[in-house]
Image (cartoon, rainbow over all chains, first blue to last red; front, side, top):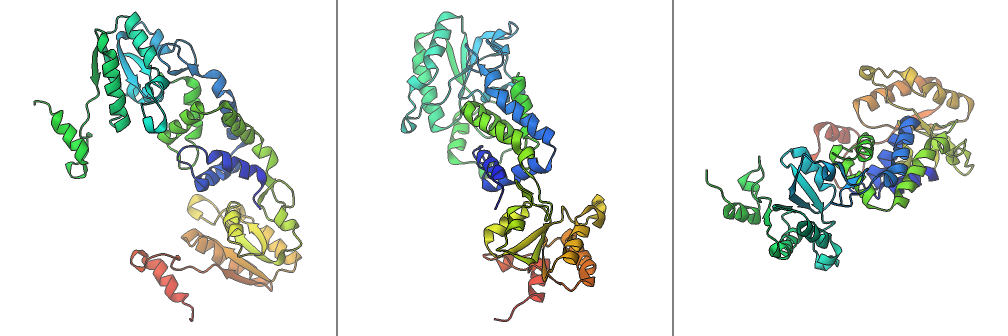
Length: 197
Length: 197
């Protein structure tokens, strides 16, 4: 007995990540209870999204201009490339203000069980960037997971033929974490990666 | 350095209930990674929502037709009115298939601290329905909270002048719940409302 328009909206909203049927329903009624201006603003942004946003031809980041503002910025260190899995990983790294180089988006990680091989990722493009430009160091900012490790290993081998240093983000105890609640693998990595104080 | 179109979408999405900046960002990138067809479908539903959905002139439910399908259904018991706080409460009651009467949406609960008095709710309209039609019983399906209790008490007094029975949904231990984790108030209510077996 729910109106069809609400049902259709709930069905669409529940396809968003982390949104179940109940949250989708809450959202739909919230939008309905609210102003139609908000609903229209959201509708306009969604309708224009894929038209406004494209992939940067150099690094693969989401951008409104091609090349993206980071690749076009001459103030950044273009000899230092940070490799990330997905375009959205750029945001968190940019927000940390730790990095002043440029990026390269792989578009995934090597995962044979899911049918993702090196050929599905922007690895050839990364090799081309290293070959054609003066790249000093490549920092792999990949998740410390099996897929991340596999991909890091593959990239390390692939890039061996170039005079470029390949490093990976340190893995270990998170700041503010508790030894008691740390899993064995993380603990083992933090032992192996221990630093002199 | 995030493209503006994504930032704007994230800002709008983070206004949804239960959605913080991080989830909003995840959703935005999910939509961006997905097909533009999905984004357009969602945009279309949002843009049309407030135009398609109105309030039922009788009960106040969200509906595409006025009166709503429930109020227009002659197969339902129109002498039995279930009073709910919000239009979205209808869905859960309808899904339980426990109730074959009609509804009345109050549009809130009496909450003096938030400036919501009886005059802000559809109480006069409820009294008018009782006055003008043969209403046998009114079931108050209001949350067992301070505001729900206050509103129930107020409605009970207001409806005293009419020859109508006023009842309220039972409050007590939830099915599948555990005595050990039940709060004192719920336990006290379930004692007072105990039923013979």
